[in-house]
Image 1: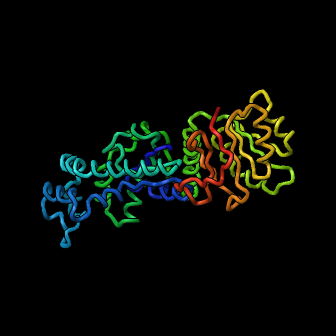
Image 2: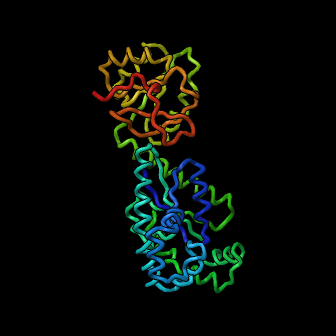
Image 3: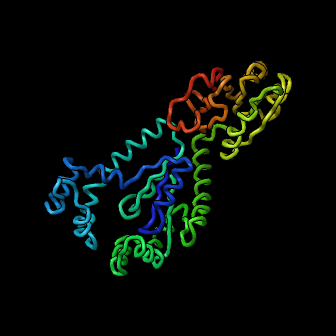
Amino acid sequence: MLNVALTGNIAAGKSTVVDLFQRWGATIIDADVLAREAQAPGGEVLAAIAGRFGADVLAADGSLDRAALRGKVMGDQAALDALNQIVHPAVRRRRDELLREARAGGDLLVVNDIPLLFEALDPTQFDAVVLVDASPALRRTRLRSMRGLSNDEADRMIAAQMPAERKRAKSDFVIENEGSLKKLEQRARAAFDELRHRAAVAALGGRVARVLLLAAAEAREQPTLNPIAARYADAGLAVRRVTGDAAAVEKALGRPAPPDAIVATAAAAPAAQQAWTRGGRRGVLTSLSADPDPVAVRLDLRPWGAGRLLLVEPDATGLAPRSDLFPTANPLP
């Protein structure tokens, strides 16, 4: 699993990029949502905030009056540091819990939406950092038009954060947001594709380099292998496809550089099993069930159990693997 932090100064367009990443398949952990959960009425965090900043930061219903609290910490670094020391440990505990759940569920790419990443956390705890950035002048214009702020109010909000120039050098990806939404989406997509590639490679753990995909000559299951081939190729693996009978499979397995993993359709599975056994049972043999339900499966590029490769159904990210998908899965010898 690749654990990524995504950040950006106010009005840079971070939330738009988060929405895009989520649409493209990333698991999102939102720091602001976690903070709101931690500051819920009746909890220790809200009690500590009221104790430090006064009861006037509480609304009539006992919830946090965020505008009142913002007024007390805006421009006061000591007050902001005190607030962070109260809230961030609780947020970190909840984030760690969600990360454990994501890892256990097989999620491939987790993106942590953290506005104050550089101000409040150590960015090196993440596998990669993505910064969404725009010029202060453009961000000021956005704050005026979108939030109705004056120039002075916008400037105070911009000045309250660390300048983006200091963050850029510490980020693995910088997504510029100076133009149209279409241009932002193109730049975000380029960054996301690279993150997906890194996630796939990390999930494989360097164990698999060559994959052989098998289908029987007369089978209608060939389309089943298309998404599998695409995902493995995306991870940078050498993917080879063979269609034919046992002799063709045996020839493919007998090449000087045998595959590390074999995925066969149900129709090709008997020939694959026969050729794989005669060839010394090298690599990991997996096969699809007769009805993968539906045929267009999604490949989760992480080892499962003793070297298995895991297929799950579309939109089933995080679910346990279906045991019937791999009736012939075997560990490496």
